[in-house]
Length: 114
Length: 146
Image: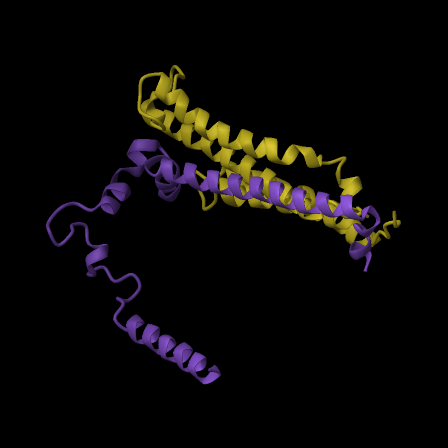
């Protein structure tokens, strides 16, 4: 069983390395995704952002403009995810620790000191 | 309760370094328009400054700096700042999160968008800072604090 696991691991790694050989070079301007127009001839969204970010928002950092203005909904969702994680930590940990304290109140600090 | 044994070197160094980390966090939030950074990164730096004091001075003394109970409400307030910015734009005639419709007089449309981005980043920074500290405090919940 262990051999099968290792075999799967290495074959999958080899597959990923083989697939990475087909990727374009970094910063290659001729690749499809870096061109201004898509193969169908329409203007891509990224070229719009690069051309108009400063005109639209007077902010030199176009990453900030994309993050907070053009993709505002996405960032609102991200922040909600963080809030949800915090609330779930609050609910889960508070419950577990309180239950244990009620059963044997003196035990709670013991494993902290151990 | 076991008495906390302070490490004077760690306490002094963190006391000196923590305000500078905080200042750098504020810089990263407010300078996000011109340099890499923004709400998430700046909020994480602010939380790091608070957690440094929590680790070295102990949980109880660190309550003087930042109360445990502040964590979750302030995280909600951060999300509300973001949502309120979008909602403010909506009730004054635009779409949700369309900052050009924010009701501040005397600023051009592009300037309003810049201002809206700043408000949103402040909301993100507050929420991230509060939630990260709150998660640390929740992990300590129920143990004897020393």
